[in-house]
Length: 238
Image 1: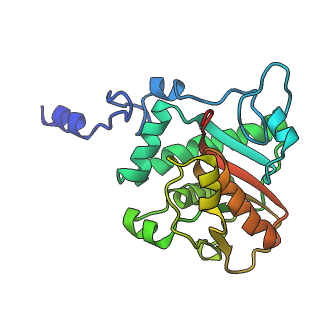
Image 2: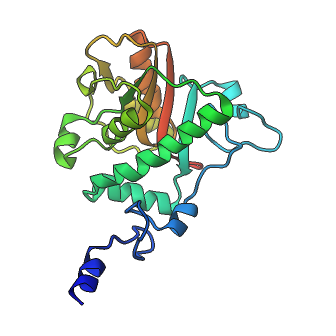
């Protein structure tokens, strides 16, 4: 009886359905893993938005106005299940979820390498938090992902001190596109030389891409030549 009670109390439960988990991954049951809102295979390689039947490779928006990054790889759409998990990760002191998200990103990257001959970057770089927000949260969720991915994919990681956020920007979620762009203007700074030419920026969610545009601008000015974006989720509709 003591043994059974101990197993019941210590057994992890699924973050989404609250059912006991008996697999090796301690965050989601197998069914919830399978039903996550994974992005379709036919997505634009520049922005990760789904393609129509008449589009191949890139969507019309990216052809008409190319984003500054070369490739955007996301695991999921930012739908309700994904939103819940990411909010738990960022705002509810659940940093251990980086293990789940880094596995999903690593799987997506590996599939791109195998199926589409994707060229891995020379180094990884996490989107920084402003020092005030970092002090409040206690950890940078993007950097935890970058550390995991660096180990899993055997790619060097650029030190946090080399790329900082100079503005304590407002949350992007409740702003218009114009407000988001103005909010992120000159928000990042390269403080020490970055010698590699091809990097991947790691973040949790890409919505309009204004954060990434601002980051790319600062990095291109510092001499980086190619930037890819790796993230957990992509917002499909703003």
